[in-house]
Length: 581
Image 1 (cartoon, helix red, strand yellow):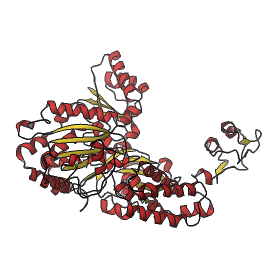
Image 2 (cartoon, helix red, strand yellow; image 1 turned 45 degrees about the vertical axis):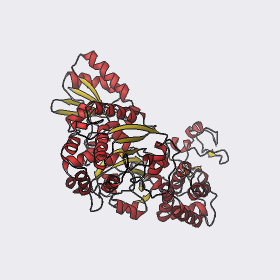
Image 3 (tube, rainbow, N blue to C red; image 1 turned 30 degrees about the vertical axis):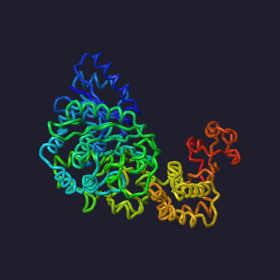
Image 4 (cartoon, rainbow, N blue to C red; image 1 turned 60 degrees about the vertical axis):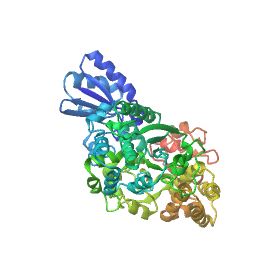
């Protein structure tokens, strides 16, 4: 019997290490022969800590396993052979994984990411063997072309084309770089792969290096991912020991090695020329193209850059054939895509689905719908560079082309779900605040334009909007898109443009009626106690600034001058006697 404890960042954050320690303690106490192991995140982050039990051909998954549940599992399941049904995963939660098509995430949550033997046991590095011993570089590129794999980092550029361009370029050295600097708020797709299946990335980079003729590679990973860096570093060391990295890989003339560079967390370094500058020890700032990195990149040598998810697809494509990958998805958007579900959704976590699946199936079919069964309002796709897709477009297929038509982008795969209580003006303000802070400042339109837009949005959400603000925002949006040098500035206006397009009424309410439709902006709301107040005094006791007065069993009153609009009174009232106006 073996017990596996999920220890991705989400599992550890919810107490998985304490759960593991308790299992080890109770297993020793009861004297049962059970092996304890760890794995990465299986994607159901909302159920962590997750514990999987393998007993021969029997499998049981326990969810939300805090230390106080461990002794019963050991006593009843391990000792007496009776699984604890009330702790196990429910059928509707099993659907979260069962309704997906997992290629990138196929090993996450199943193997020990720090043990190369477990990766080899599931077919790991077989694609590498196939490529370096029986395929030419051009045949590898052709297989990637047949697959239709497009870059999963945001732009969706054909992967084969970038590889081929780097291969065709002349240079004394060639480099392959992985962009693991995942910076979108609410996105954690790459982190999960790095923590749960680091060898898949390494193998994808080896194959890519072989195809374009590179001898060295760099994984540019954000420093805020310490667990990912630790497991990746260990995986690279193990791959070297097994002969998959280094000189004369598998006895051939091909030599290739990897190193990790920890990035300082600059969002702009997601742009490939800024990333290269950072790798070279310079400040992360974009440069004009051409020349493209495939021609002159890292140290002015031909360089190919893809993100984690793109590379993680490659071993599966080589093993199963490009046609098998291309058979999934739509005509222009092939294969699967990993999405991070976050925000006001019942089942937050990672999902991998075939491209072309409607948004509705992802959010409601797999994600379970909106928390507290509130009304779905919109979903932000593509992070700060993307846009808000409203409820009326919920049937939009998830393809690069269809999502682009809405004004949003697929991006790296973040999906932030919003309900009826989300203010769309404030949402636009939030993303503009992010991009304004992350602008490298190299070009005026991005540096100054995003600041001016943010100032307008802040005024509007504070109840100080003016006639003409909407038109000024639209003018600034267009000028920033046209005048910015890199993708950060060119896409920064997207959250504003899409919210203006689909939720213009909310901007008008803020400016002309001094009202927040979602009842979210503090400056535009106030709390009122209704006549049906029973005078229980609960709200009065909870108010942190003594803004509520009244005697027991009599109606209470809120002093609007003192009220800081924290909402404590509204949350406390059990009689629905307090309303937000």
